[in-house]
Length: 328
Image 1 (cartoon, rainbow, N blue to C red):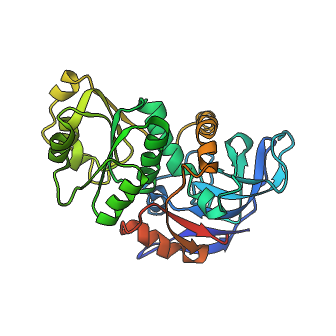
Image 2: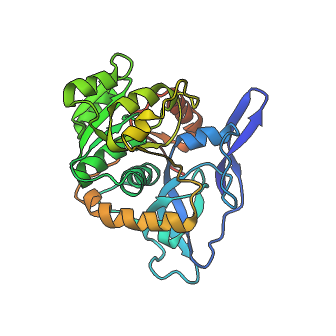
């Protein structure tokens, strides 16, 4: 089969379409003809040698796919050839075919295209895990979502709005990303390049008012997050794009407010964990996708021959929502 391979060159990494063996499904796996996949920052990190795949996972890029079941393992009972599915992978999405555990596959709603479905698994499952399993967001609590224009950010806003009726605060660095956040359900949206979001939050809704913070940025936001978090607040780190070494940390706010601080990645979780997460997510959200109450925000769609261009778009932070690759 054809797959996009990472080639290390003197000038850096390059992406080229090459031939690799087609995988064979184990007894509880599906062989899927991939129709679309989507880009994640983990792909950009992996191609530069900064994010190795989990042990036993494919070294081909790509963490989420949509497609059609072409072959089922000997013990598979819930799926058959021709079924339209989408789901999360530990790797292997930038290819014509992949295998996926039968319990990590989700049935593709009739109202969603393959492109839309491929934009769901990684970002929505990450957002769901963060809000529901880790931060345990409660109904009508206040959540602050940084990088609100990202795939996870746009997903988290929709989930916070639809599942918890939360009061939602969003930050981003461009007005069109803030506009999108408001359209998706954010009550407040601040441009971090032009505004001190902590001061704005305190002015608009009060001090110590944020129950949950989802942060991808790290260093630049630590002190401001401490200012706005409420008693028993929860801060979840999903990345540290702005740096990981914070100066002049005081532990006083953590103790005084009884804060919980967590970090999480999804890719290196066990298969059992991801199966349980997928099942919980599907039970609570698939009906919302079918009703149109949840929908992935797609920034752009590229033919997979244009993957390098698509990567550069994400690298340059030009996307609002997901970048999708199609015609695999």
